[in-house]
Figure 1 (cartoon, rainbow, N blue to C red):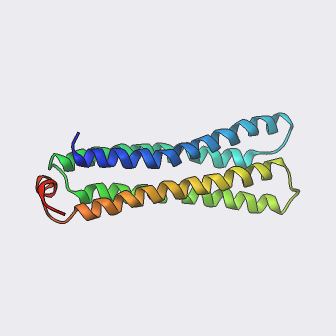
Figure 2 (figure 1 turned 90 degrees about the vertical axis):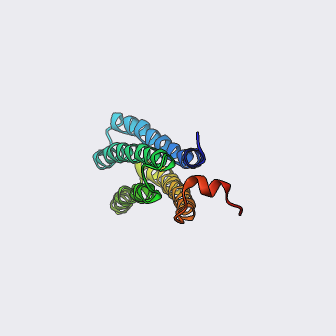
Figure 3 (figure 1 turned 60 degrees about the vertical axis):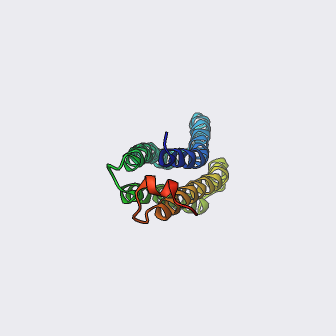
Length: 163
């Protein structure tokens, strides 16, 4: 494994910590929704919103794999760092529209009676927002690293050049 692949591997580990927090909270919400449905509560708005996560998670995973692929191609001089940066930019803020939908659901539910569903969305929602922000921060940090590497030198020249 060369330096470029090693670097994206390390960055991926850091953003995956936050991606795991996203999935964990979605699982927590889904579990409690089953209980709420059994209690006869209307959670159709939250169920519909959660379905959007599956699509976004699939998109994120596909983009992540493409970022890894492009990093390897860059290392092998078959692609440029710009290819990696394009993929990273698509990964950034991917979950924000979905989180905005959650805020809209919370706003509508706040207008009614405060209940356990709203409490669940507040608690898990806060962690979802923090996890998404943390993931975006790690992706952006790696993108800055890639931009620093993109100075026109060949990868082999960079490794041997003094700092």
